[in-house]
Image (tube, rainbow, N blue to C red; front, side, top):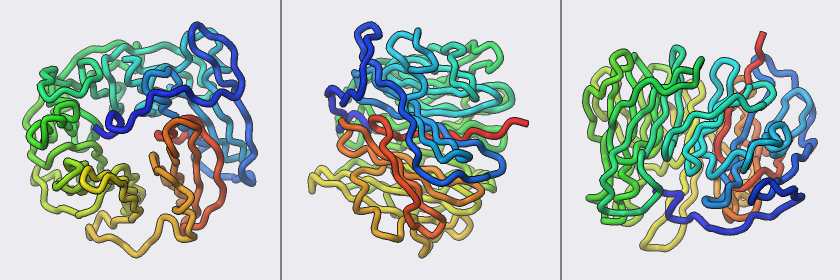
Length: 385
């Protein structure tokens, strides 16, 4: 899996410190980055910064559309009594109802906060948790189940946990494949991509290559759909069909984007591009690729927009003003559903603080700001009426 191939165990740059157990606290910071905007539907967005694995440096930032203020590391200030702050490696984030959920992978927990204030409500303990989705009062979370380890003989199968969002209690588990990553919910089913990422050290044969299909009512795995080796991402378009990414094997098998026809229950198209992360807005899939080659010992970075109706790569550019040359390693992406602004994070060298870039719908840079360490996961905060 990608993160463990290049994770760097190092001390992060500390701006200001206050001892909290054995972990230093980075104080919050307000930065004016743009002119205030009046946008219907959303107050702003949260950005979860992963932090270097092993350093307990996951942090949470917030951007306010109405003020144009970007605030770094808000969780630590609002929750000063929480040991080790957010924890070790922020892997996903989501808002459901009035709660904000941060999936903290190596701390084996989901941190649950008030969506408006980020004040801590509680936590859900799930081992090696990965991604989260919500449906009709429940949260569904993928888990690698076992410890973080690269091992071609890894034998711990993964699962999806079902959580009651009112009580924050786990009510059921459904076993899937090895090292399940992102999941999506469509048409009464949960689709889970199984990566087998820990076992990939044994060659291509070690990777998983299936999507588990879970009936959401019975919460049982119905079947698995064969796709490709080393799957990572899955997202539904407006018609409920699924777009799935494979990281390949970093050598002879390239990364690709696959289309799963939900009605047919099979892969019917392949787009030969690396799709490290992507965001679907209307009928457009905004994607960046950061493909590593063990043969060339180098990265190939790309940005594209795919039409989900025609499956064609469009002429539209995510970045049209040359700013892509400033971005060392794209790591997260989000498209604002109203303005069509595109937000891209830059993980940089994975050790020092990264950055967030905002581009307008024509691909021109509007602003950028320093974020936390390895910024990667967005959640839009709705306006509650």
